[in-house]
Image (cartoon, rainbow, N blue to C red; front, side, top):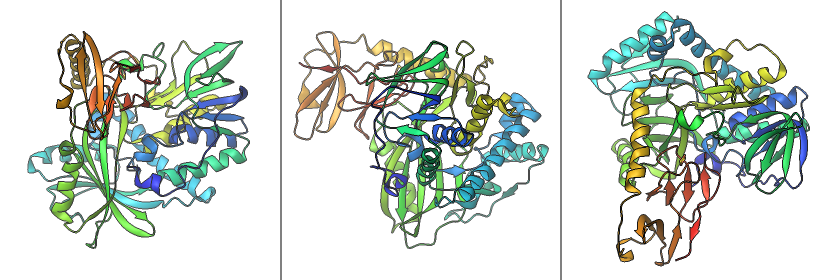
Amino acid sequence: MDSLWKNSINFDKKFSKLDKSLDCDVCIVGGGIFGVSCAYYLSKAGLKVIVLEKDRLGSKTTGNTTAKITSQHGLFYDYLINSFGLQFANDYLHVNNNAIYEIKNIVDLENIDCDFEFKDSFVYTTSESDLDAFTAEKEALDALKFDCELTSSTSLPFEVACALKFSNQAQFNPLKYLYSLCDVVLKNRGDIFCDTCVFDFKKQDNLNVAFCENGYTVRSKYLIIGSGYPFKNVPGFYFSKMYQSTSYVIAFETDKPLFDGYYINNAPPIFSYRTALYNGKRIALIGGADHKTGKEVSYSSTYSVLENELFKYYPDANILFRWNTEDCISLDKLPYVGYYSNLLENVFVATGFKKWGMTLSNVSANIVCDMILGKKNEYSHLFDSTRINPIKNIDEVKNMAVDTTFSLIIDKLKIKDFDFSSIPEDSGKVIDIDGKKVGVYKDKNSNLQFVNPICTHLGCLLSWNDVDKTWDCPCHGSRFDYNGKNLYGPAFKNLEKFEL
Ligand code: FES
């Protein structure tokens, strides 16, 4: 099902496909909030920009986020101080807090109707055993001289043991904001093309050339890759530095009074709450049930978890929308922003926003645009995309290695004489036929469709996702529909179909 945001705009408004090769100053690959923000800033600075989007604008993470505009990225500042030092944490805090007001300024300047509201943000726990973590986070923020408050009083419909409150944070409808920025880009002579998949880029005659699957090219001095998970593997090697996480959201209406502000708990199982406007009515969202993309999941381990939580507190709730999203997470929990690689001239990237992409996309767009415009940006050092720091998040490194190995091991198993009747209707499974791995999907009429269940990114074995009816990659999170059509990168090619 489409998200609340996609239902609130004319999401099918079509931008045309690229139908000829073009030149421009800056080509931006990816029409999410980062790419469109870059297009906004650069077109206002007088540069000729072209945005190339593989699907519809904002159809991936931007259109499925919970859209909290906040510098409170979980309990994060104690981690930042301990890992990177006080000055680093201070800069991270201030640049993200500044982004709230930068977005507000754009909303005012461009007269954008996107339900922007200032709200207080809370991280909470219901467990007394977490209190030490909250005390440490408060001490970290005190050291940064940031005004915040520990409290046990919130407007949530249940008791909390503790909550850390950041005042004057914000929320909005991300697609209303995104599409309004596009209007400004078009007014400033920019071009936007959808259903246009870029599969490679190269330097030719001193220009960067983006190659599209339909055979056309866009040549530009500057190239920005804002495709979520970067799709070019070498150089850059982003596949070795990030994984993807899927999370779920339910939007509901209720006659019970709703909470004010927005909330997220500090430890799994994660639950996140915010309110929103839908047809002029105040409704609410509950999100969570996160898992590494590619894990086997069921309705009971995803939406049901949220529904159980919801009906505990709002038994009269009427669910309006259900959706899920996918986020890139780097191993050291910081985005990669700046040069795609030291080996590529004038190619830029931003990725790895770790579920906090509303402020981080704005921060990243400012860093990249300042680099292109030759302006100094005092925060560019925070997210250096060419950093080769020792990996600090050892648990995630282990997690990735286990999944990759697991995929290779099961690839060797043989399952002979498979009985297709054991596959339920509207479900799928990887089976082995004559020594070949085959992804089988049985539709609601018991018709069978077969795909090669090997990811077109770097060859990991895919797993069946019975919630969304997709083939998901456990290695870097690419996803394909039951028919093999690529939905999420870094893969961009569809799965091969088998005729048996
Ligand atoms: Fe990298 Fe599948 S996403 S191998």
